[in-house]
Every structure is written in C-alpha cells, then in structure tokens.
Amino acid sequence: MTSTTYTSTPASRVFALETMDVPGGTETILRGGRHLFPLLPRAFAGVRRIGVLGWGPQGRAQALNLRDSLAGTDIAVAVGLRPGSASAADARAHGFTEEDGTLGDWLAVAADSDLVILLIADAALAVHHTEIFAALKPGAAIGLSHGFLLGHLRETGGDFPPGHPVIAVCPKGMGDSVRRLYQQGAEINGAGINSSYAVHADPDGRAADLALGWSVALGSPYTFRTTLDSEYRSDIVGERAILLGAVHGIVESLYTRYRLAGDDEVTAYERSCENVTGPIARTISRAGLRAVREGLDGPARDVFDRAYTATYGPAREIVAEIYDEVADGTELRSVILAERRLGTRPMSEIGGSPMWRSADAAHARRGARDLPVDPFTAGVFVATMTAQIDEFVDRGHPWSEIVNESVIEAVDSLLPYMHARDVAHMVDNCSRTARLGARRWGPRFQAAYEQIAYPAAEHPADTALLRAFDTHPAHEALAAAAKLRPSVDISVA
Image: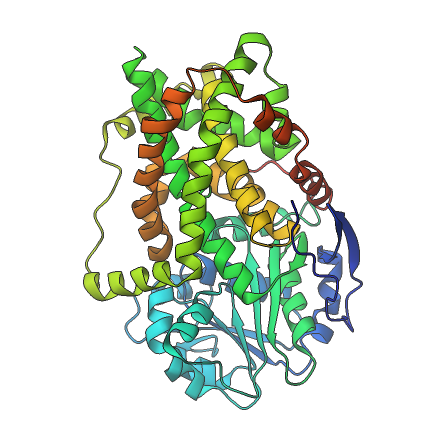
C-alpha cells in the first residue's frame, strides 16, 4: 500500500519549511501560527490588494481571516459580489463597505486586485470565469480553494490565462470552522483548520510564497502540498463519502436497524446519529482511529469487529465508484446540469424522514449522561472511513491529504457542526455541489449497508481485515499530523 509524497516542494524565500515523516517517506510542510504573521508582507510581496470574490461560508471566513491577519500592513482585503447580491448586507455588517473601497462589484474588485481569490459557487464559476479572467490586471494571481474549475476547464477545452500565477489554498473544513477556529487561535497559537496548497502556474517564481502566506493568514496549523487535480478528486469524493454522503447513509440505515430491533425513537437516534457525531468523532479526534476499537472490551469489541468487516467491502466498492465518476468528469457534469435545471429554485430537503423528529429530544438528554460508543455504529463508521483512506492510498494521494480529507476534516470540522445541528441540517444547508453529491450517494450507501453489510454482520468477523486495520499505516500518518495541531475544544454553540 503506497501513496504519493511531494518532496520537491518549491523552496520558500519567506517561511521555514519542515519535514514530516509519513509512511514510506517524508512530506515537506509548513507549521502555522500567529508568530508568522509579521512575515506576511514579504510573502505577499507585490500584492497591495487581495480581492475575495464571493460571500458564502468560505468567502466570509477567508475574507475576515485575511483582513484580521493583515491588519496594520498596507495590504487591503476587498470583497467582490455580483450585482444585486443578497450577501451585500451581511458583508457590510462585517465591516466591508463601498465607502472605503473594501466592497464592490466582483469584476471591478477583480480588476483592481493583485491576488483574486475565487470563492463563488462552483457552477457560477463555471459560467462566469471567462468574464473574471478578462477583467484581471496583467500578472495578477488567481487563487482557488477548490479544484472544480480545473475540472471544468479540462471538460470544455479551456485553460487559465497565461502570465498569471495560479495557486490554491484549500482549508480542510467548512467555512464556519475556518473562522471559528481562527478566532480560537487568538488565545491558542496555531488553532485553526489545516489547509493544502497547490501551485498550478508560476510564471514569476512567487507563487509558492503567495500560497503559503495565504494559508498562514487563514490560520492553518499546518499546510501541506498537493496538486489542483489531486485536491479536486479527494475533496469531491470525500464530500460524497465519509465527509457527508456516507454519514447520511450510515445514520439513516442504523436508525432503521435500531428501530426494527425494538429501540424507541430517541434511543435509536442516540445510537446512530448522536453516536457518530458525538463520542465516536471525539474519540477519533483526540486519540485516533484505532482508539475506537481499543476502547471496547469483550462482547462489545466482537460487535465492532463484525460490523467493521461486514461494512468495509461494500463501502469500498461505492467509494471506488464515486472516485471513477469524479475522475472522468461525470460528477462535475452532474453539478453543471443540476444548476441549469434548478436555476434559483430551492432544492427539496432530506430532513423530513422520521428519524429527524427525534433530534430535539435526543439533544435535550445530552446533559443527563455521557453517551457511550455504540460498537455496531462505530464498526460501520470506522470501516467506511478506512475504505475511503484505502481508496485514496491506491489512487496515489499524499498522506497528509489522505488523513485530512478522510479523518481530520470530518472529526474536527464537519461532525462537530452536525452534532450541534444534526446531519440532515448539514446536508440541507451545505454548498450546492456537496448537497447534490450527498443526495445522490447517501442513499447508495444506505442501501448497501441495509442489503449487504448488516446481514453479513451476523457472521463471524474477518480476521484478515482486522489485522489490516490494526497495522494500517494510516495510524502512523494520523499521529504525525496530530502532533502539528494544538489541543483545542472543538464545539459549536
């Protein structure tokens, strides 16, 4: 089992990079922290204005973090919005205004900026990127936090305009977490959301430091190198699998299983949704994947083992199918088609199934006791997470990307939010790209668990699969990544 390691990271003229040991090799990374903020003017040499286009969760978080990190420098941060955008009022409420030139029309902001960060919706970016590219000043850098546009350009025969640095900084968490953990960093140096970075075009040799400076300014505890193509594939697959789509399939299928076994509605909700977003996520965040199984004894561990080995195969098959459809452009085309089909019409919500009526009652019981890890739920969830890890390893992703996209982003960003709001709320309120993927693939996972995995869990566990899990190199990679992040209490009010 091997993965790619990027050891030829472009040298930084500004930041001291470190080497991190990972299974089978090393990766060169940047450890973040607010002590690096004084270096940002050097990293952004030649940049006097950063334009953030879009005010969704990522746009809001990144604009605010960049502005706060660059306070006291001569680098301005401006927000660009489409005419008539409903987000303008909220941007003004956060201190971006037309009067001081920090809020304006998206094309005007793009034309006046030295680094233009494109954070509008994927489908909108696919439609409007040519207008944005045409507005850019000569040599302005193009910044992305997602590789979706690269996939679209390949599908349509397009390309990024020549003569412009093209970089990506991709936080491994939702926008709310990017902002919330950055604010925690004011008291705990280095608290934040990890990011990957990519240099796609570097015509003047400054792209790496631009990207690293951007990541430091967002508050990333550590930044690792990837490529725009690799980021796009892992991110889109992850959304449809363990980060969102598979979670929906897991909790819906488990709720039904526990109800059929005789549990009342609230208990079934606690054993499914509450367990995944609560004690299971916290155990993985604090102690790693293997700690979930090690915390179970006797009959409970046997239940975990049977659930794990019965689930791994069906989950791996679906993750592989998702990956193929992301890699060949099928998922990208489905998002574009959905945008054309739906327009501005709202999507139907998935939060109407019976289990979600129990959310409030289950949440109200949280203070009465510490919910223990349910071994069957844990086996299903950990097997699905491991299946995604193995698929990414076999597809050649670097270890930092694998553990961040498959584990850290889930347990340190998305699952805490789901614990506060519930999984259905997350699915119904995330980006349209993620929402479409979760709605498409969540039911696939649910059917596979109900029809294949759960019947197989009645049989003895596969000892070979358990040995593979116990000795999995992901444990080493996850432990190395965990050392780079301070211990913080991740919660959502």
